[in-house]
Image 1 (cartoon, rainbow, N blue to C red):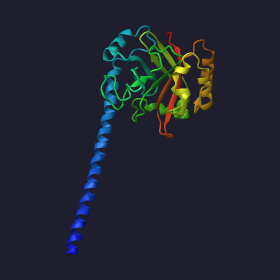
Image 2 (cartoon, rainbow, N blue to C red; image 1 turned 90 degrees about the horizontal axis):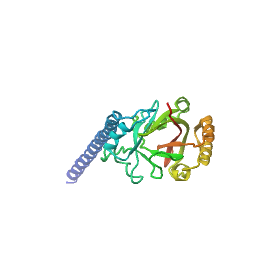
Image 3 (spheres, one colour; image 1 turned 180 degrees about the horizontal axis):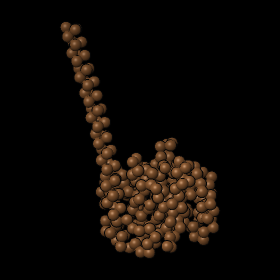
Image 4 (cartoon, rainbow, N blue to C red; image 1 turned 45 degrees about the horizontal axis):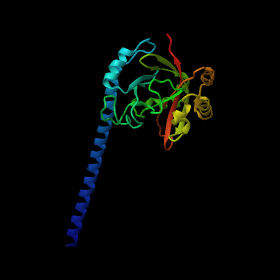
Length: 252
């Protein structure tokens, strides 16, 4: 009798172990499939919107933005960083959470959208404007911001564009930082709406890499403007990768 019970217990143990292994394998397959779907969706949205991308340096991009605004009236600009896959419309929602998990079409999407801090003016007249995007692999959303953590890439890639309906700006990247998500100097853009001197001081003291000549140019500008780009980082708990760029009005 004891041998029979032991045999049954062994069989049950083997069954539950096999079932657990099967469930773990099934969950792993599902996770890979689900992750692939998330990245594919982000790529599809970007590919569709790139067909409507306005032209940097053009005197009037109102026609392009009319099409974008027809999709979503919260679209306020377009950002591009050269030699990366960062090439997206920027939205401003009612609050900071509006587009964390919502795409440009207003649909739920874990990849979210690129969005402007609610403390900022959607027409980008502030001295410091901050935009956010999820960090994703395969060059999706703001995943390429961590490229600037490499000193060689940072030094060789300093350009981009910020495009609005009535004007555009050349972007001159001058700093890459790793900061905590609670860093007030970066994540409270409302304090720098009219004066960026202390922000430049903070960048100079804390940047991984810095182009001092661009900082000097900003200090000499009569109406200096900075665009900050933020995404999550795995470097430490609550880490954020920040790229700062000087905004220079494109007059060509």
